[in-house]
Image 1 (cartoon, helix red, strand yellow):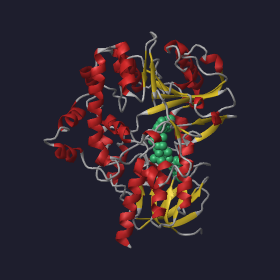
Image 2: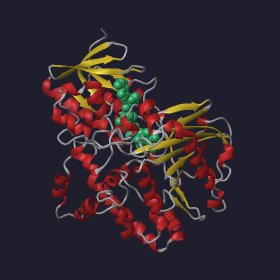
Image 3: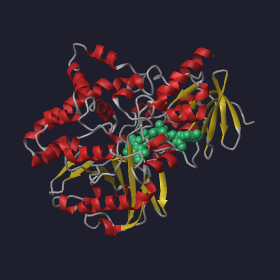
Image 4: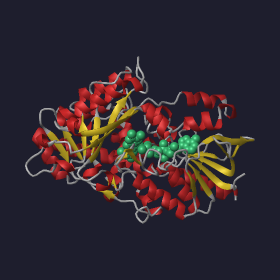
Length: 515
Ligand SMILES: Cc1cc2nc3c(=O)[nH]c(=O)nc-3n(C[C@H](O)[C@H](O)[C@H](O)COP(=O)(O)OP(=O)(O)OC[C@H]3O[C@@H](n4cnc5c(N)ncnc54)[C@H](O)[C@@H]3O)c2cc1C
């Protein structure tokens, strides 16, 4: 029998590390158990091709909460980013492009090249989303209110109309209300699930992402050493406060006796006792596999069965002997190496077809994706003169109809490579080797159910007080002493540290009350 701990954190994803650090800072004897050989979960750097290091899942730091950076002293522990300017490039097949610069005036000049009328619309668009972000921001680092409570608090304020619009208007209608140019609309189109941007409520989850305007610009960009640079800093911060981190330690069961969490059993049979257990695994894994339905109320298990995890993605990683040539989209003097993220989405209809095909279980011929070449900033990622490039595909079926992901892997990777080559003609010939992560790969590798990168879809029915389930949004669970701290809890996915922060505070509140 190993030592007894105050608290065991199941999973060393970024939220598990953040939760562990806060609990250790408050004096709890804390153990993190991570099933993989490295911590970080979906926020890691891995040498997927010999000599070439990739941010294998998350690729840009844009929502990391300033309070977490400060409290964990992440800078002192090695976290740093390369800022990107432009931070986003949207090229179009007809040779147009929009560069999104840190300086809004420069972005407006870009939009004016496509549609002078949409410059004013762009200003109003940001005003709308700033308001939306201001509505949600106060709730990111607290247990969430209901939508109704938020609505009540906004009565009679300037925010009331924005909130009503978010609840009642589709993203597509919102775009049509603001902009005239389809290319400008294509720069902003978004949807939280495969219902696509025409679904009512599809704008609501974007309010969460809009909260990125409150992130310190110096914490936004390409993490030095890849995204694993950030989670390594988090692990150093946690260790500096006394957290013990074990890798290669997969939890098989969370021990429950008398309705209370008592510790864990690892897959090799080792049993470790603790007063509390905090799970960074997704809610479905935590309750259905690690706890077991037999320990839970039938109604609760039925509710779990209705949770939505439909949104899946692909990620293509390529080792390159030379940088892709996007010069046909650039003016004289502009640097092709530093285009930031390059988003492929030529029109709103193209985006909608991507959702529709995915809903039907096929891989679309209209893939929407973002390309990033971090080695243009960080020379440690690839050999001299060579590059690493990754493409994150926004929509992919969890399972393909009629064939397995394994059968489709080669064809789909080639389809993506062809698509990128349409924009950068030297791309295919520059590839030394590639890897494609399918939803199935992500499930097996990273451990999240259905390869869902946010553990649960971030849709209105699974946001705020309804995340992961109504009545269970305060990180506590029906099992006494068991808490959730991952992306499946409020406020949701992305590399924010917020669920880890909030879960630790719920644990500490109970710990002090019971002391
Ligand atoms: C392809 C992809 C691209 C993304 N891009 C971005 C991006 O650019 N920017 C951004 O901010 N976010 C991005 N995200 C989302 C973001 O990475 C995730 O939402 C976030 O990292 C989730 O963090 P987490 O700590 O809650 O969970 P996870 O990262 O899933 O960590 C959970 C951890 O628990 C471990 N675990 C699970 N079960 C067990 C067990 N039984 N025993 C022991 N350990 C266990 C897992 O191995 C894992 O390490 C992306 C995600 C993916 C997959």
